[in-house]
Image (tube, rainbow, N blue to C red; front, side):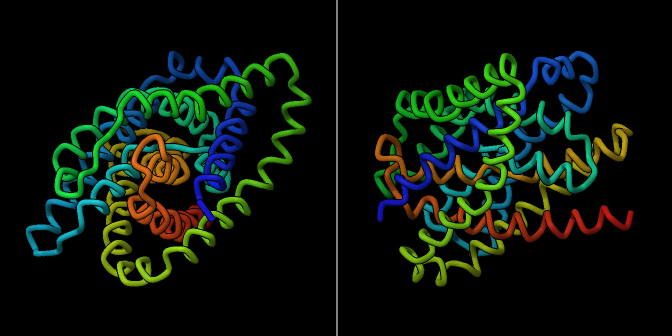
Length: 286
């Protein structure tokens, strides 16, 4: 089974569901409370890729070499911030859900431009050995079709048919997690040997990445004296990536068309949920 036929509808539904939760007032938050929004976006868009590349470089100095395909996959994860799941985790952690929604919406738009630029540099740096190239135009078109369009449709529906949007959202939010579990299961079955073999190295890399980025969110919040709710949201938003987007780009026949590149995102999704569920537990006793 080609996983692209599973991940495409999943990503589209997740982005549509995100749009269903958006309201014009969510974007007003940028003007009302610019500091946490700017800090969150800087963490997501700039610091995340820098931290990921730094981890790769540090590991290489200790002769802990990752293949070029895995490096591309790791950086792809680092360049795909947000996702509707982060809003759910912010709610569970009693964070600032409005801030979470605003950051998710803004980062989804901004990464339309930053992701191609960063990944073009990454593939030029490490992809030559594996003959991997990034068709930037295809990436832009795919992201517009699979992300901007469904988010916009959901957003417009929520403006003009708020009750209908709420009903659809209540259905989709129950489907999202089982759909992601299905994707991970199918992917694991197809690439079991590679995942098992590489789990130690990629599991360590992804765990370090998650801990470093969540720690970065906590540190920035502390330095700028943000509220407890804002801190909890930034920890989640800066640390939580859109694995479905990364998998879609990796597997898409229009872009990389290489499921091996998606393996870091699969392992990341597993480690991310375990670590952030633990974080949500910690917030309950704070």
